[in-house]
Each structure stands twice: as structure tokens, then as C-alpha cells.
Length: 200
Image (cartoon, rainbow, N blue to C red):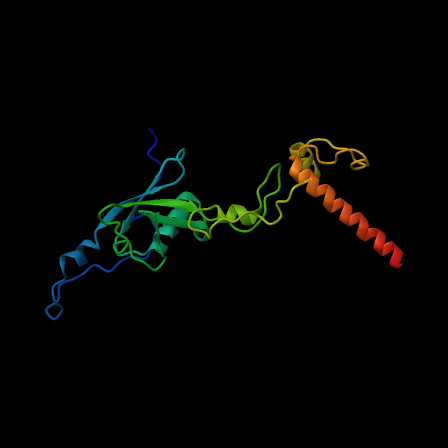
């Protein structure tokens, strides 16, 4: 089974970290400070059909350093990366130790889409595609999604293009009470039209 690409800390061009040295004036470092200088293998999971990446990093490195390593190993641009750990979005200025990757070194890589529209058959709008990506703003239906005459025809069925003829029931699907109300409204409308014609 393919375990995916991996990158060691020595082969990457990440900034080297200073090795703590004991000096007579400096106090002894705490155990967690020494633990942040130890390398740890971080598993970067992507899509299900793609093998995860394994990158060796120091816990004192930042999320921005991890994104640079992912860009070199996986080919994903740094500005298009969103890293999630335990369903939380990681900030670029956070250290890997502060993100809790020392106890569970595993992150989820989610691509970040831009606003550029993609042409094609049944292509969704760029704004909707951008909003459907996790951690982006919540998705709202597009205001450009309107009914077409074909949609109305398929929903309501075919009708007389000339409209209802006089002497026939124009609304046969309504209950009798609503049909009487519609007829009364039509009579009032005809009377108002006649009055306007007389005034002219």
C-alpha cells in the first residue's frame, strides 16, 4: 500500500532551530522546552483517494513553516492551504506545539478556492463554490438563481397562450369559494376600468 510522500527535516530548507546549550548563567530549560526541539512526524491528510503526506518537523516551528513544507512536497501553493486540527483552523503564527500536534501529529489539508469562475456544463458559480469550502463564510443561495419559462411550464403544465376566454372558468383548480372571490375581483376590476375610460 502506498504510504504517500514523506519529507525529512534535514532535506527541507526550513529555517534551522537553535540547539539549546547549557551555560553557567542560563537557567536549566524545562522539559517541555526540550520536547519542542525534538522532531516529530506530522501526517497531512488530503482527499480520501490520495495517500497522506508525512513531514518531519520540530514542534517549535510555526504553521507557516509547515505550509511551506507542504508546498514543496505536495505542490499545493501556500496561499491555497487551510490546515485543520481537531476541526479547528490553524493560524500561520501558531507553533505546532501550541496547536497540540505533539500528542496527535495529524492535520487535514483543505484547499482554499478563489473567486474565479470555472466555465463548463452545469458549473457552479465561483462565489457559491468558494462558500461551500469548509471554514469559509456560510453558503447562501445565489440571487441569480431564477425560474425560467421552461421551469414554470414543467411545474404548472401547458396553458392557453392567449389566456382564459370569456365565458369559461379561468381557474378550474380552485375551490368554489375562491372561484367566487376571483370572479368578484374580476367584476370590480372591469367596473374600475370602465370608470377610467369614462373619465378620459
